[in-house]
Structures are given as C-alpha cells and as structure tokens.
Image (cartoon, rainbow, N blue to C red; front, top):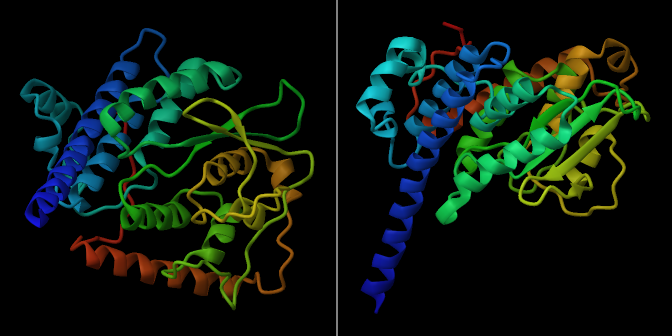
Length: 320
C-alpha cells in the first residue's frame, strides 16, 4: 500500500512538471501568434524576446530543469525562434528576468486591444488562462488582473497588472526581488521591500518602512481571472499602498496584481506620483539603501539554493 501511495505521488509530481513544459510552450505559441497579427502591437518582438527569456529562466531553475530545446520540442519552431531571438537562448542561464511571463502576455494583449478596452483585455486573458489551466495546469498562470487609473473618470488612462506567475515559492521570491530591484516604480518597490524577507510570517523591516499612501482619487481595482469578478484588496495591499479594505488575510507581499498595475501608473502619471506619501520617519535614503542590499543578499541566497550562476545583470529585451 505504501509503495502504491509513493508511486501515485511520483506520478502526480511528473504530471505537474509536464504541465510546466506544456504551459511554457503554449505561452510562447500564444505570444508568437499575437505578435504576428495584422494590427501589430507596439514593440511585439521585444515582448516575445522577453517572454522567451523569462520562461527559459524559469525552466532553468525548475526541478527538474527544462532546457529551451525541451520546451520547444517542435524543431522548426525552435530553429525559427533561435534565429529571430538569439539573446534569450544566450542569457537565460546567467541573467534574471525583470518580471514573470504572464506580465508579457498582458502587455501584448493591452497593446493589441488598446488600454481603454478593459473588458476585451480581461476576456482575452481569461481565454489564455483557460487554455493553460486545462488538465490542472497552474505553472505561470496569473490568478488576478488589476486596473489602475489616475482618477475615476471613464476616459482617464488605464494601467494594467497581473499577479506573479511563476512555478513554486522560491522562483516567485526570485522574480519578486528582481521586479523590485529592476522594474517597478521606486515607490512600489520601497513598499514591497519593506516586507520582503525569508520569514513565512511577513513583518515590516525594523529599520525601513517604505509603505505608501496613494491619493484618494486613484482607482485601483483587481479582478479574478477565473470568472472576471471584482476583488477587494487583500490586507497585504492595504498595508503596502493604503488601499481601503476590510480583508484580514495577508497574501505574500508583492505577489498580487496591484503592485505591477500601480507601478505602471506611477511611472507615467507624474502629477499623481507627486501626491504619493511615504509617511514613515524610517523611509530615508540610507535606510532604503540598506533595504536594497538586504533584498539583493536574500535574492543571491535563493539563487545559490537553486544552483543558478547569476552574472548580476537583469535581462533587457530587444526587438528584431
């Protein structure tokens, strides 16, 4: 009986890992297809380049490892992509992605549909997720989308984000640190770094509190990508960004869709950014520098655990 249970566990593990490879291939195929559409989005080749690197990196740190060749088991597709996008093949084993794969899918969908088409964007993302979740696949699947606007007027610009989409807690922590250090607006990064630690029960750093208070008129609305229903902010996002919520549960800090969405907003909306508050006395340049060093130190520890040789660079995608 014990042997049978063990075999079942092993079979479940192997099935789960095969779903990683399958989802990796499906995301790449979807991105290539969207990039080739007649109404070509802005910078489509950069987004394909970036998603290839992000997925290959996650394959490299997965257990078991998945090489680009094993993910792209169609020889024609492999050779075509290697010819058009050589850099992801060269740097997936030495440089870190700045964000997780589904964020690239989101950008491609937003660019194709236009930022005002909120319902169409949501619907298209749900279609991709249904494909990825078939047979119980969860690898690289975002569960939520967030839309942020500088104010509540219908015609103000919409900025989108999705929740962290990796495979397993340690890869998630690695990409989260990379986003803080290389991608997100500094206000968002400060807030998330405040809670970034190895401890399961996340608490603020004793020496640095970079949490922020957004201007009251900002819209920040999350949605479930399984059924499209609006979601109230979790306690973590309430603590990070001052979002009003009655939620008690704290999800892992920075993993929700709100950080990416708000980061995209604050990068573009200067007037909104100027009204953001960082109320804590501990939010100083010296303390921020220490927080960054502590995040880097923990990031390197996670990478050593997974035997990844980092060259200290974050991958910068390029078009072809």
